[in-house]
Amino acid sequence: MSVGDNHSVVTDEERLYRSVKLCAGNFTDGSVDRRRLSSQAFADRSLKISMFRAALCINPPWGKPPRLNLDDAILDFSCGEVRQLGPINHQVEHKETQEYSIMVSPDVSGGQHVSHCLVHGNPAIERQGVFRKLKEKFTLLANDGRHWAIRPPDMYI
Image (cartoon, rainbow, N blue to C red):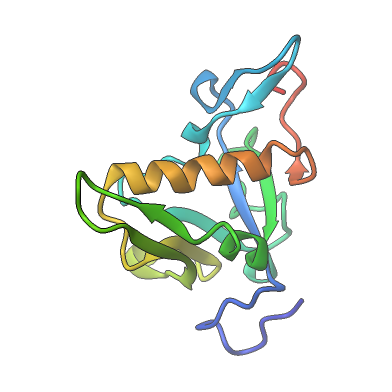
């Protein structure tokens, strides 16, 4: 899928990459003899998940970006799959339930690579509890085993 000259719209067909650092916090013990990706692999202080648009990367998935470190594993999702992680419903204390749709937007702020994009909520996610739900949905999707563009070594999975 080519994005052509329009970098401002991320289409459902586009492939998105997430770099996963090979560290213990990004993987957790699963069932017998199986480790699984942890929701920590999607953590970000901005409460938005950084990804890279494959069509705008150089030598994907091996290049930098999307691979932030030489030994990183790379997850591969369609943008449509990512958007379908929503809606996320969240209720704070005894207030009305808020519904968040999942958006994917280009982000070249702060000198980011042209392929950089952010997964975020609409309305904006401002609470850790909502972001935790988004990370958990990503983790469930990633742990189906079909989303590795570059698999981590067996000792991690």
